[in-house]
Image 1 (cartoon, rainbow, N blue to C red):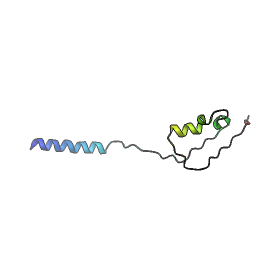
Image 2 (cartoon, rainbow, N blue to C red):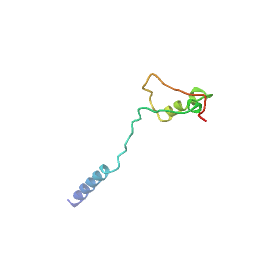
Image 3 (cartoon, rainbow, N blue to C red):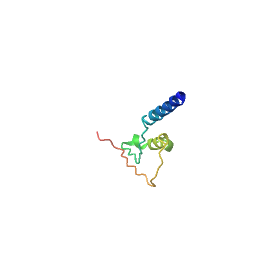
Image 4 (spheres, helix red, strand yellow):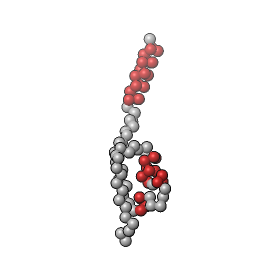
Length: 78
């Protein structure tokens, strides 16, 4: 009977400790805005090396919009 009580207490303690552990929180990223100059727009790079494509692949994001708006300027502000 003592063994059964010890097993029960250990199981109960195990359940309590597992439920008190830190839970992993996930953040849902809906949109990413890339703002910059020709380097940000990937000027002179193949399409698969553009920052937007690399981020999409590395972060495993799914494109949910059918339109991508990219505005870039060839002039600097200096």
